[in-house]
Image (tube, rainbow, N blue to C red; front, side):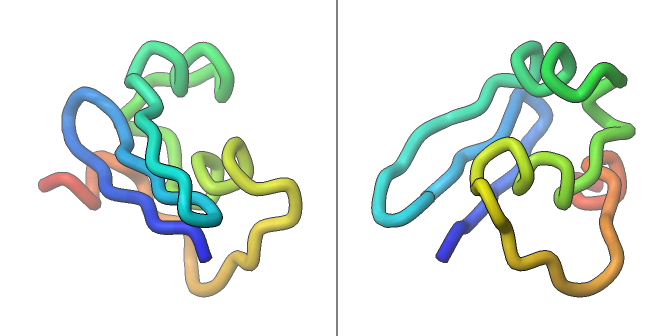
Length: 65
């Protein structure tokens, strides 16, 4: 199971029991758009090879409000 916790500066990730942080700049560079416009599904795809995506993608700007 993968857990994502978003804030203004990046994302705290727990992936298969390993905790790490993805910084905002890294996410913007990898996805190619501003951090607030990136979706949770896009971040999950960065972390997991074949993520289980459920529900509608949510923009980070909407999550951290």
